[in-house]
Image 1 (spheres, one colour):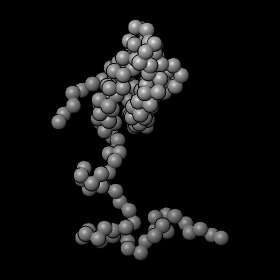
Image 2: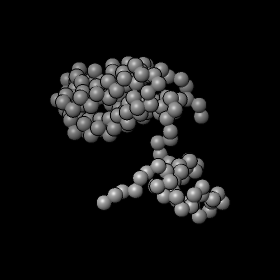
Image 3: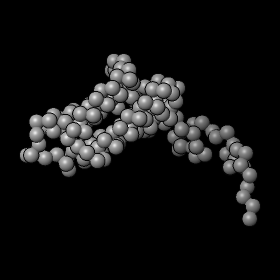
Image 4: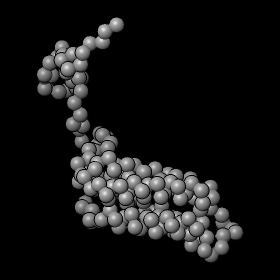
Length: 159
């Protein structure tokens, strides 16, 4: 399934607007967490070729999903909210609902910038990782079966 193209600036603008409105109802850690992650998003826009910037923004978005759930569930009041605070809470909840979709778009941008697959799960295919160990079912012989860390340019430790 091909995702439609969404600009990173659009994602930032939408979440900035919803977070600003969400700050009407929630104070303290809610604005700190969300605006910090949006600052990472601005860094990802400024450095278009940086894998670090987009990966930190992606990780931060994923973390704020959890943080927003905790924060909204603790500080949401069923009674006592004015209409303005109810509007702010609704915008915070809408921002929370849009974050998984934003994570999908940002992950697509991360892959476009040359990022690797973050999770190596069995059903996504075999891992392309190389190590000193050979799998049992592999027919490929290791390049140097007795080569340890010395053969890769590491000097042995002296005591």
